[in-house]
Length: 348
Image (tube, rainbow, N blue to C red; front, top):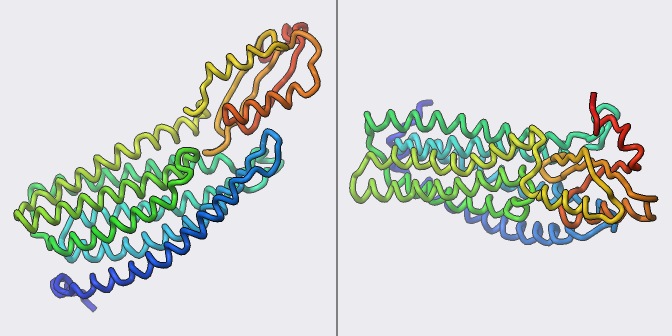
C-alpha cells in the first residue's frame, strides 16, 4: 500500500490526535514524576558513616523510571516527526527527528551502562564494570557528532535546491517536540552535575528542546514571509547548538577514558591537605582517576615522621570523601627508611 503524502499533509486531525495522546502522557507523567522525586529524595539518605557513606546504588534505581519514560516518549515522537517531516518536506523536522532517534539510542546506551556499571566485581574485573559508563558517554558523543555531519551536509545541499514546506505542520509537530524534550530533560536534571552519564542524557534532551523551538520559529517565518531558506538555516543552527552542547561531553568522556583527573578535583588543594598533615613528612606517587562517571579513586604514598596514631587512615579517608568527593582511597604508609627503597618513588 502506497502512502499518499499529499493526503497526509491535509490530515490535520492526525496532529490533533497526537496532541491528545501527549496530554494523556503528560497527565500520567506528572504523577510518575512526583513518585520518582519522592523515591529519589529517600535514596539520598546516608546508609553508613564510613568514608563510603553515600549510597551510590541509588543512581540505577533512581533513574530506571526516568530512562523508561524518556525512551517511551521519544520513540513515539521520533516516529511522528519522521512521518510528518517527510509529509511537510521539512528538512528541519527530519533533521530533528534523526537527532531524536540518536537520543533514543543514547538513552538506551546510558541506561544499560548505568545498570552494568553496578555489577559486582569479579576476579577478572576487580573494579567491576564501572568504566562502562564512561565508554557509553564517549560512544554517545561520537555517534551524535557523526549524525550532525550528515545533517549539515543535507542542509547545505538544500540551499541550492529549496523546496516548499508545509509550515503549519512543521510548527505543530515541533511544538509537541518542545514539550516532550523539556519533560525528558527535567527527568535527568537532578544529578547531571555529578554523573557524566546522566549529564549526557540531560544535555541531549535539553538541546533538543531548544532545537524544536527553533523549528517552530522556522515554520512561523516560512508561513509568514515565505522564506524557504529559513529551513536549512535552522537545520545548520541545530547542528551548531548541539555541537556546542556535545563538545564538553566529548572532552570529559575522552579525559575519563584516559584516566585524567576529573575537573571537580582540586589537585593543588588535595596535595596541600596531604602534605599539611602533622604526621606526614612527604608524599609521593599521588594518583587520582575516575572509576566511573560518578566515582573517583586515589592512591598515594605517605612518608610518616613517627608512629602512625590510631584512627589516622580512617580520618584521612573521611576527609577525602567529604571534602574532595573521593570514594575509593588507597593509602600506603612508609617510614622515612622505607622511602629510600620504594620502587615507585625510584622506578628502574
